[in-house]
Image 1 (cartoon, rainbow, N blue to C red):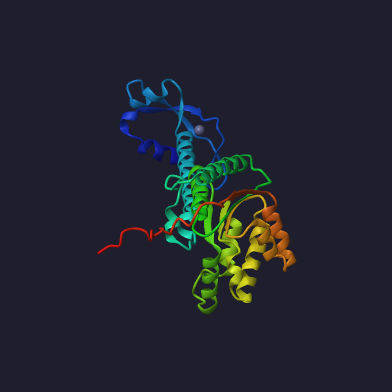
Image 2 (tube, rainbow, N blue to C red):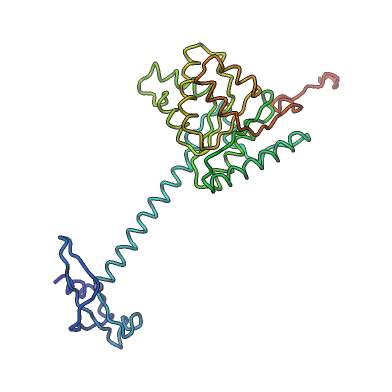
Length: 302
Ligand SMILES: [Zn+2]
């Protein structure tokens, strides 16, 4: 009956005739019973003949093939959607201290001095290594550590690395300014509806394939309760990140950071691990890019 209905639903110009043979494929109905489906042959004048020639046709085989293609397409779409969702994490979940970092990339990184050029090249090399490690599913990663004074472009380069990885690999990335994260967590203490609490950040920081921890060490000036929150989050996140790439920016050197967190042994062990295999990118000579020097010797206006 089903086969007849299907035959009837075919366009008339397909022109097929029922034969006495059955399809040899094992077809099963919706209740799990094996069913034999009859084979058709195409009329030499019809459209079906162009497609199938003398080959006998099983309508159920055609239907199952189409169904399989359809569900394949559905799952491809779902995978594609999931990929986009992961890619969009960088855009929607990143936390900046300075919103202009959201647009930072290699293209708009201004190079004025030799040091900046060298550091840009180092950052590009770091991207290459991360890509290779990701593709080979390496179980040892390294931390790119950008250090130097405020405003020299550390965060910009860190974001450039992250953006490049996000655009070229199937990965989830996020940029998190540690101080801003702390402010958000604090807000969640007083507002139970505010979703960005400690658990949220532990999940985010642990989950992503590539993470920028921006301005690490700068939170240590805050109150001790807040400091403890940051330590808890870092401890959990870094534990989960041992086979993932992390990029750190800081005003402090590697040694200063280690010292800073050393009072807490558990944290210190993790920070040491984070900084053990480090690719340093150091800004020593670059001045604060955000500051425009005013020349006092210029002619006085007015
Ligand atoms: Zn069949």
